[in-house]
Length: 67
Image (tube, rainbow, N blue to C red; front, side, top):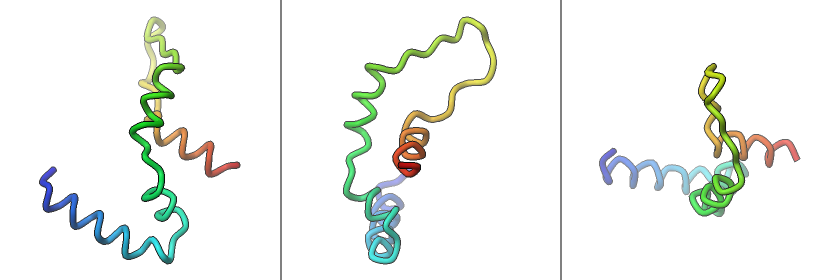
């Protein structure tokens, strides 16, 4: 994606973060660093076939949200 598009999205997220605690958390947490740590621990096996796994960050956010 273009950097202009990403900057526009980031600006809008920061503007609406005051209203939404979920957006505020998303801005405060560096998910890329957490993803590196989780991927070291995560064990994925594709031997049996089947559906691909859900996105790791999406699942991690769901677990944190459920706490």
